[in-house]
Image (tube, rainbow, N blue to C red; front, side, top):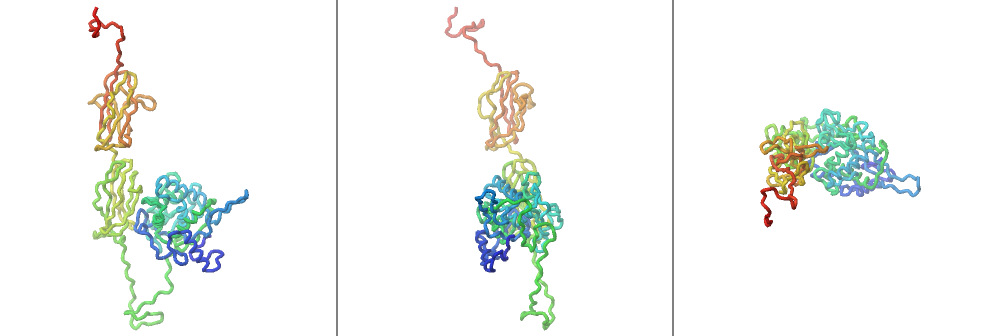
Length: 588
């Protein structure tokens, strides 16, 4: 079992030796982390501005709501295995703490692989997920998960009721944490429900986002750490990411220690056999599972003596003051800015409409106000995209948390429309307060074209029963620019004034070779180009019309001609009676 801060390790001969060991650990495993002379995390170190100012995280400034975490440190000995030269001799795997349960380890590595594809610039190492998983839940209680990666029983932190921890009222009606009064951190990666609501991911492909599933939780944690365009290969950005998970310098130092330890080598152990930590920042094993919440910090037995009125010493036990003193009333704690907020007001947000694939010209903006209508600064406001849409905020996230400025205004990042058309909602709420939010309707319209032109001017002709040599090729534009990914329809119509589908003349063929005279689901390419399938002709001759229309109203009609092939008069054949003789030919 790993030691914790200030505790002697086995074999240490004295307090000085133990202090030196801890100092060595801090120096070797947490580069750039502030420590004191005994190797402990420096109490004066402050979280980064990124962590404290907010971002797209959960309530109380962190994904976990700053819930308790395990403070055990890794062993000093490197976990690198020692290769054996004797066949059949087991390979040494170092300290037991280096072993990670098989399913949990697989979840971390899968999450890293997924993030490499979706957010390659983040450079997320799976060892960081392992370090956070160790600190948050002891690797899902030593790997007590089923074959699908779901914990056998919920892993819950204490009630976040403000009694020694953050105060976060219920946000999920107990759906995730079973508590309809207060939120609790949930699962192997200890997400609070309000954060999981937008950060949750389906990591094992079962169609669900379950914070109690290690695959889902690991992938969600990876996306959470990688948001806002972070590059975790840059130490300052990695530090900011870790602090956004739990806003504590001691937490940062502990995670970095485990990160370096796992980077030196790990090995797989069977599920359920992982080593369990024992020391928590909350005073007990508070994140290991359901149970009573840790008690609030105890009141010191000895209290400071009450100063005499006007100064001049103190009144100790057994000492009678010269004059009766009125009981002192502790000064009232001024409310936080968030506590003074009564409602949200719209801050002149315009109409939210954009074409698919484009950025919305208008941003959602709200203002936090007191009951009297006074603006409140330094309040965290969360913006969430709700509904069946692939629209996101800039950066690819579906939620963002901003702090109101001096005018009480918070403005969401720009919205970027996806390819799904239709409506969705942007919801604004105050973090840390149960207040009515503001909903904004947003609409994504289909891509449009206002002009269609044919590329090429070759006459489109065909003999009866044959096929046209050239395919129809078009170019779509919108306001002079190429109109890419615009929906189009092609129909062989009866006449210029009758757009009804023709029942004779040229036609297309479907996948089964059957005659088709209307094509739907056509789409221009990224450059606005559209090439129609081959056209064929039946036995009817004449001039026919092909009409192509697009979303946005662009229309083009193309002529198609079906005629018998021209025949030349064979040489030496007498011309019909009355036909003039060719020039230069003698007349008998």
